[in-house]
Image (cartoon, rainbow, N blue to C red; front, side):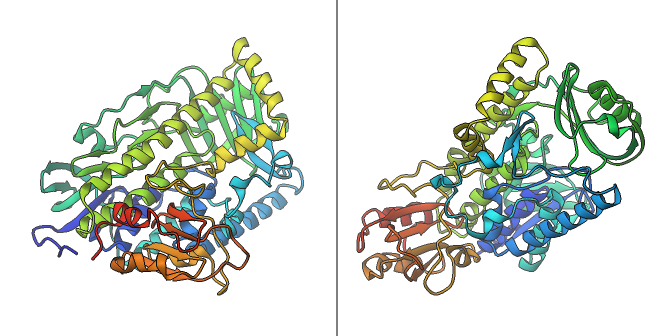
Length: 514
């Protein structure tokens, strides 16, 4: 391991302390990097944002021992939701049974989902957690960062930087510092992305969306759930007073202008036709379908993650999940480079693995906007898609996409069905589960067949890869597998004592053996 550079204040500066920046900082700290987070806000933004997490994000929290906190936040949210419903007369507004999300505002029926599909196997307890607000995710990660000793500086804003061959000089509202690397997790208007010169191609916005939680009258004229009218789309519920509108009249004249009560009321009245009157606004936000992606995620010693790397409409709820996935993928790799245990070329795999997923999300959200348009051609196409969504095959396909269980990286080495996929959360004979052994942020070589020929290969990777020899609680076809710190299977075999390709996988992802 390379000793810390004395000419640096920190190994890594993370610009932005939202969920993505905090997740990245925690991963870097687990990997031994000296990291500081700069966040201009002094507290968590209470504005209504993502209302849930998908399976990949739940797995990320699970693999770091944070799933119980997420499950508690989910329980608390559902309890509060029940109280609000009761206060509004109970039973009037209820969540549809087995609701599985939506595509372009067309609800997906959970009872049509094929739960026997192999892609849904192996989630373990992470498959039971999803109704977690973005603010709760940020709070959980903030607590985790504090426990790990991450230096989080709230009320401090990045104002500029100079990237050089051997480091980055960073200017902030509180002074200057020098770091080895800078990662922009500073949102869609990222200063880091702009100042570093990343190209940001994409498509211009054509909608204005508004989402709010308000006190209002006239709600008897609103229909629950997603509704399409000749003037746009609106969603009402599931929480009383919560609504969303989408209008195809171009982007707002001023994205920075405050969202007013009058603006929200006029939009909801226009789209729904209901005689609603808003008395008080608790939370409000405005959005568009601006869809852009950085041409690459690394420029020398500057990298991007989350909305700084890609922006799109919120339809399908992919933004938070995509950003957390970026952080999980990048954190352990950058930490290994900082420690001197891997060459910086390992960082090239970050763009190679995550850029295609970002591109997919942009296309996924654009497709939904196209189906939400109010013209006759889009309406005809929407009818066809809605009819397809009444089938098991289409529903299962779409739910797999929304949940993220279809994700797979193209990794080098011997082919195996698990390679490149999220590791199944195997129940082990000692009473533990696979995810229990990933809390420390190391790789894991799991030998289910009890053969030293496999585990012996990893002897030179102590401190980077943990080895575990224990059979599964139930018979498994897989004899052994190598799991990266982000939970992705890097190598697997079904044959006991078969270590072919393991040494190459270890050196590819964890550097040279000691």
